[in-house]
Length: 326
Image 1 (cartoon, rainbow, N blue to C red):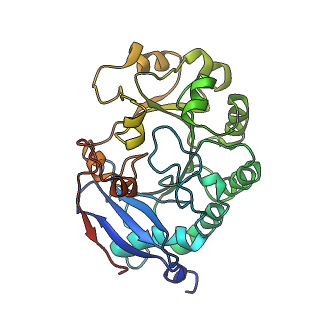
Image 2: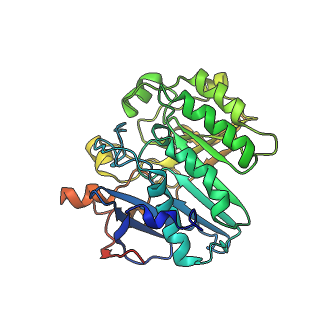
């Protein structure tokens, strides 16, 4: 019982959330020291919440990486504790499923709202604790990472946890964004694993019968994505390609990134077709445009909007309502 109630002693409370939507809700929580963090609950249409429910939680207060199209970067105030991460999971769980029996066929938790997860070992503590906290039909833990240099211990322990607790359901993603080393360095301005290192780890992480390792690209008009580079390092038997939009963020607008994926058939050089022809399972993940207005899509960050006082007509238009720690 003490473990199940641990989130209540994290010092966290929800101070506001976006207005009600059938798609997603963004929550803003504050710890006892006044630091604020965001987390999201959402569905993935056309699936209903009875079929799939997704939580997207933060691991850092801000992020030191400062990726070129992510509003959460550039303002880093430290790591969340395991209890503070668990709060972001337990809060929406208890609102919908007070007994901790999660009534959806697929329950997914993504550690990808604010912060590069490999900078915080508490993420691994949470992954180890979750099976003792809830009852579920199928649980999909998900980590998206740029794989920074100096994080090998994190990934070694993650591999062990995955093999022991989540051998076939873990969804692991490398955020590449470009096959050009120079462009990738401009988009992700920190030292990180090279393609060969990424491929070696992905080969160890993959389990027979489990999910392929995802290579994610946020596609803009300037994106360099060459299938010959992918094939040199990443086997289509083990890796799949996910193409996502560059969402409308302040950073994307500042750097004049224009997403290709919102233009229906306007893919540069028929990109998805070329990648599929190279042998890769390819996912074009656009989502609902309403999620941009809510601010729940990847790279969007409500606090950046609140601080700026600026306006992006296609994003951040849902009103915030006051919340409380129920």
